[in-house]
Amino acid sequence: MSATGARETILNLFRQASAGYVSGARLSEVLGVSRTAVWKQIEQLRQLGYRIEAIPSRGYRLCDVPDLPLAEELRSGLATRRIGREIRYLAETDSTNRQAYALGEAGADEGLVVIADRQSAGKGRMGRTWASPPGVNLYVSILLRPPLPPQAAPQLTFISTLAVSRAIAAVSGLAPTHKWPNDVLIDGRKVAGLLNELSAESDRIRFVVLGIGVNLNMTAEQFPADLRMPATSLLLAGGRPVPRALFARTLLEELDALYAEFLLHGPAPLLAAWEERCDLVGKPVEVDEGGSGLVRGTVSGIDRDGALLLTLADGSTARILAGDVRQC
Image (cartoon, rainbow, N blue to C red; front, side, top):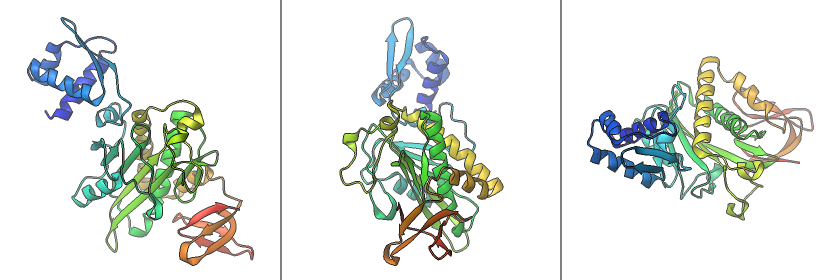
């Protein structure tokens, strides 16, 4: 049994014992190792932040768990079919997307999850950075290998956005909205962003990395001063902290269910569900398409491929594939 497997077995025995103690002899028997080896595993769990009490003649008792998105915590009770079959936790990394992409190139299976406590070079859209302090937020990337042509890849952005908003509603009770193409807002302030990165051949997707960043427990002082748009966190919006492992588990379960629905029924039902949470429909906006300039119109929805549809002043419809949207 690997060290990670041994630690997960110990934690499962603690949870089954509820508030009771688990003897060293019982742990030794289940793991098939010596009492000394058990003690070493207990010490490793303590170093990760688990508070474990040891009483002679009674055994060990789990008193508290760290607020870390550890693989051991995410797998505990995780109810998914595809996503999370392999979970890699990193205390610190440059970018979870970068790590997941490299693992995808190396042949990692669909459903791989890379999650970190801190990123030193978190990635946002259009080459921007994503503030990634330790101890407060969720930084996660998921590897998928959908049997789709490359032009269908943008549809996956809407699946991950919808999964984030549903997880926020389930865990915090808040009511998030969507901003095209990949932001999640609460009361008009950005609480989550998504960045998908694609590896494809001419006729098929090799893999897609779904990068997700959610501001869970950031305080106002932790946000950078040069943000492009107002931001918030679930803590600021809801008034109470959100356990990171619980949120991550909920998100992976929502994403797993939506991805299965997408593969079975196609994008239409999920795009319609995304659009229900988009509060820009029917409102005037301008879209900065970069080198192509500004386009002004009224949002009429999104099409099957996820392009933003604008009704222009002359009554024609513009189909926007990429850009920054601002309400007029």
